[in-house]
Image (spheres, rainbow, N blue to C red):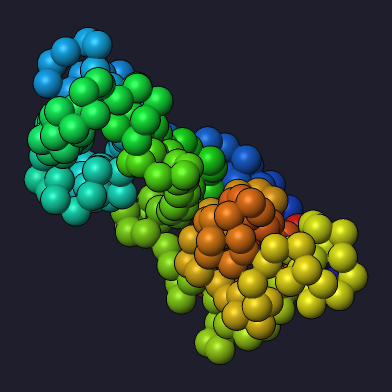
Length: 287
């Protein structure tokens, strides 16, 4: 009898450990990562030939970057990734402030290359082009933290710009960082082998549902290109809702359709996910 009591007590202890462990896991998922951020904001304008009566370019930029993390080596890797994703790979081994300064200087320097064309057109027509003409450039760039829990950090970089022509352009690039390593997560780090075709079908079905069509082929009648060519593009972010893919203008549909975001809940894609990936604690909790 004492032996049975001991087994019962041990069973309760084991169950208690499991329950406690589950609670800790859930708590960790809901807890913000211990990382802090800082930001740099600029708003610059330059008039052609330095004359305020001439067309001008405008550059607005807000850059958010990690400023404090417990592991300095990982912090440095994160900063390098943030800088490269925002300013380009030319901005290696510089501080965020230096990267922003170079970014502003290059934008204005590139714009100054229009001055010879502007001068020639002014001489040809006898009057200055209006500021609303194709000489009036602008760029608006920013990044945003989308998710910061469970040792994962999702962020997006967005840019809108006009450099002449019928209309401006926009672009959105998403990134997911593993805070245990400082490395960016890619699809191959999250999904099992040969996931592409199954994931493509789930993405296409989700896009069809978002557009209130029952047959995905109907998407081609409302501005989408060949739906059979829609594949995972590695441009995704992760949060508690699942994995969200972003398709930029012209990528899978006509310009007027705009940017396309499609969220795939974990319960729809869990069978395609690795159970030992950095996303697993988020994706498989409460399944």
